[in-house]
Amino acid sequence: MNKYLHVVNIGIQNTLVYRVNFLFRAAFGLVPLTATILLWRTIYEGKAGGAEIAGYSLAQMISYYLVVTIVNSLTAVNEDDWQIAADIKDGHISQFLLKPVDFLAYRFCLFFAGRLIYTVVAFVPVALFILYQREYFVLPPSAGAFGWFLVSVVMTGALQFLISYTMALLAVWVLEVATFIFILFAFEYIAGGHLFPLNILPPAISAALDCTPFPYLLFFPVSIYLGQVTGEALGRGLAMQAFWLVAAYALARFVWSRGIKKYSAVGG
Image 1: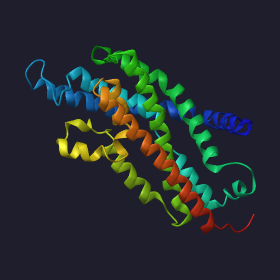
Image 2: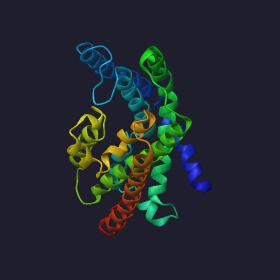
Image 3: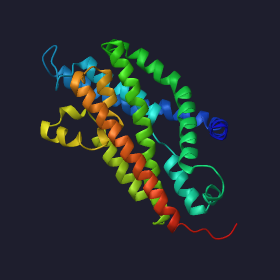
Image 4: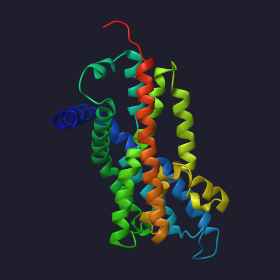
């Protein structure tokens, strides 16, 4: 356990080098968010007073995107997949085949360290932006909803990491994994709820997406926060998210076990 705590410590020190980059990334990331909020405000202004869209009031819709920003800061994978692919191509993972260090655990520690520093750095601009939008920012309906939201966010972060980790391991078989990563990102951006709440889609499409891992990468925890998932639906959603988390872990282990049989490194 101590060796992985040491990895977290090293990861924090290395990530602190990029703290200014993180600050600018978080600040400029608010620009498209502002455009999205202005777009939805214009849409609601064109409707009768107090109108709702798919059960969302204007405050709930703006809160949706604000909470998306918070969850994304806590869970998004930024450079980890590229770094893993580079480690494979450059032969750096050879050391993990010779030492008692689990590569998945090692990379997860670095992912955790990166998210921790990014969240701390991004806190100020994001908090100021939410304060500016406080008129439209709603709180969770209950302490229980907030607690389940936190549980779901933890599973979201782990699921995000495991999917990206598995995609990066494809570098064992293919020279360039960028295409696969961009395709995954495109699916996640649309089917994960970044672009719009998934429950504004036709019910058949929304139900079909619920059977995939994508809604549990962002949309589901945000829905818990807004109180739109309760009771049995909440239990089913958490169970489905846990299922995809276990499935992603099993797939990551399987791809690694097959990959190290294919992997070869020359030189030293």
